[in-house]
Amino acid sequence: MTTITIDLTDPEYRLNPWPIYERLREEAPVMYAKGQAYDGSDFYVLSRYEDVTACLRDKKNYSSQITGQNYLNLPLLVNRDAPEHTRLRHMTNRAFNARLVRTLGTWVEELVDSLMDRVLAGDSTEFVEAFTTELPLRVVGGMLGIPLDRKADLRRWSGAVMNMFAVAAGMDPDEAPGFFEDLVEFGNYMGTLAAERKGKPNKGDVLGSLVAEHEEGMLDRDELATMAFSYVAAGHETTMNLLGGGMHMLLSDPGLAARLRAEPHLTASFIDEYLRMYSPTQWLLRRTCGETELHGVHIPQGALLHVLLGSANRDPRKYPNPDVFDLDRENQGDHMAFGAGRHFCPGAALSRLLAEHAFNAYYKHLDRFSLDPDDPPQLRSRQGSYGLARMKLLISQ
Image 1 (cartoon, one colour):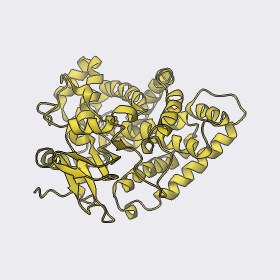
Image 2 (cartoon, rainbow, N blue to C red; image 1 turned 30 degrees about the horizontal axis):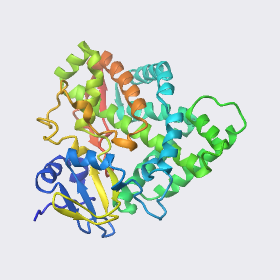
Image 3 (tube, rainbow, N blue to C red; image 1 turned 45 degrees about the vertical axis):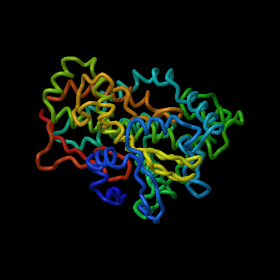
Image 4 (tube, one colour; image 1 turned 120 degrees about the horizontal axis):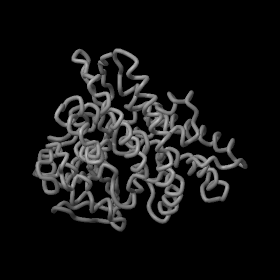
């Protein structure tokens, strides 16, 4: 009988989960976390790559509708199964499609250069606030028609979306006071923006597509608002954590930085290997549709599952030497940082676009940046996320 426990309030589990993941994979690939949610409820934990990918792709035996009939049961893509998910995902693909993302290239490049110039104008900067948060907020906010003067609100709303997922996973809601009120505020604000667009020409952005679908009767008001939640979570959180962590890695590993500056075509590989090792979203949630047994553990119908992306992406059964960053790893693109199956993150293409432009901008100026030895980087402590909360950089002029 394993003695592993998961304390969702433990900073060590949130900031350095890798040792626990290793124990889970080897000793308890399906762990029964009896009474370990804040309210004393149970959950089960899947940690191996094969089991995680099978669970995410199996729509017959595992449900994405994880919140049940309570106040968190919002019509979000990540909280719906077919046929409702199919309908919402179809509209998401129309609004957030690859063609639209490709058209953003020039605008994103100009925005990256503008933000970088502003950062370089000083002798120091808190890079997470000045760049890695600012860039995705501006892009996602622009696509949703949210003006720049609501930037602080958008950051708060984005945090509320992520806190909602953490509470659904078993985090004490007292750790995120006001998160549901923030969600309601965001929904009402998006409803107001949508109402202002009704009857007017479609501007060709994401909000315009959502309004058109609402006017055609394909989306109700609540679905329109919660689709905006999904885009904020998909387009902001992952990108922010990737940009900050990637910059930290480049400043900490001169050999890696030199190679990428000499071979910038390897940036896509750099992004994939970083996402494999440091998945910005560490887990997804599922519920069992019926009784099942896995690795000798009986899992009842309706059980809540923590599906550990961060552990699966470091499973040595899939990735040799998984704790080593390997730019030449052949199967690095098999990572599940964006999920898998029918719920694969709709913001993946946008996140890659922003990261590729940003890293190519970083390369040009790396010699001017250094980590501040008197103010070391700090990780985020939000449950289920992994990334930098703060990174002070010194800048040579």
